[in-house]
Length: 105
Image (cartoon, helix red, strand yellow):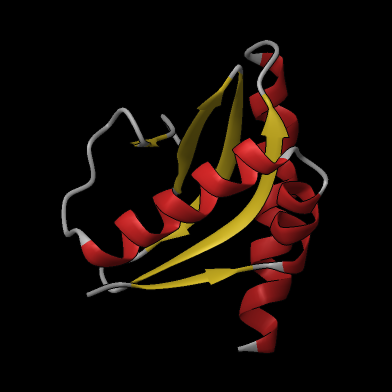
């Protein structure tokens, strides 16, 4: 139903986490690919941006910033949520990665 692409930056982040986080990430990627409307517990639009966050709860709260269109989602980068300030930094990083990603495509 939906194609999901994962950038190198996002894969590096997921690979650096423990196995539990990695398993949950790939399970949620399957859900995004197969289900048209994803529950907001897992995927939520970030206010005032073009991005969504993939919410991974595995002890701590992990987030992966996504850019999504109707038939495609791109996992751009991830971070461990400690405060709301983390979002600003992650969004700037996601914008930079998306710009590079779109150049390559």
